[in-house]
Length: 337
Ligand code: ATP
Ligand code: MG
Ligand code: FE
Image (cartoon, rainbow, N blue to C red; front, side, top):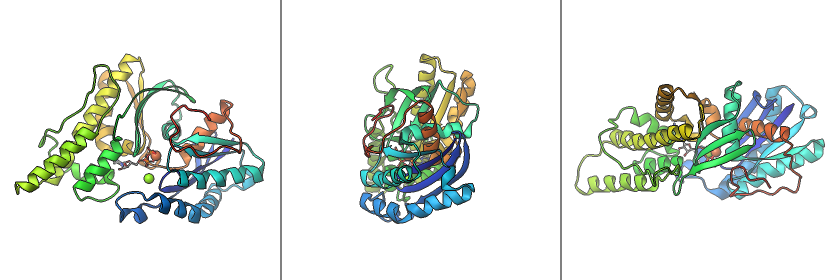
């Protein structure tokens, strides 16, 4: 079954051709990062316009690179939420048009479920059930993946997402956008025990997260150092901030796996690209005898291959959409419209 996936929820326009949910024939990603960089974040209006400009070519390139023709496509999958409404509408409308003209089934995909599915592409043997830690620019979720299309959210962030905290701290450190990879690199040169930033555990047994307190602590620390004329070692701040984030994510993921008797943990989302998070979870999982999976960096951040994969599994479960499907900016994981 050949699936064409289309992703346009934020600032990447992407189209991929994926066979049977796990084999990537092509995965073209056109990123707008350079355009949004000068604003320090994604400007929604600019993002929508840019998607419109490039989408036809991105799709054409994906078809050519996969060495197929439009007639070979069996299913069209596109992200319909969560994300920026104007951005979502571009990919979604394109996909619906394609489904209409090719007379092939169409399935709307939840972007976060797409991030999870990236693991199916990277690890052919992976099957539910497992525990998934999703850490992205807008979401931080601990999810029980009961089946390919069945999810139970055990915990989520109550304020900032992990990626958002990385981006905000990076901005305060004057590192640029997006901040995650920059902090990841800088932290390698710093002392992660230089500053003792807080970790929010919340109530006992809670699998929720909170990163705004940590973010504020970093900002306050920087202000205080500046006001007292002390030298700020940015690499130490980056490393110490990162240690707090990684420790809390790791501890809660391991606790949840034990409580729900899951012997597999998967990482997903843009922050899954983080080297410290991967290494720490790898080590802790090994100690506990838990299998640990994560996608390659290219499949962690936004791409359409993960959308095509999730679309395939939706289709297999009988979840097709009709062409009246609208974009849904605040779509929840597991929600079906
Ligand atoms: P969402 O998926 O929640 O809708 P999004 O699509 O904007 O949000 P992703 O593309 O999944 O987010 O991930 C982008 C985020 O990942 C950014 O916040 C970025 O800083 C972060 N990120 C990327 N690489 C790394 C890294 N090596 N370390 C930490 N964070 C990273
Ligand atoms: Mg992006
Ligand atoms: Fe994403």
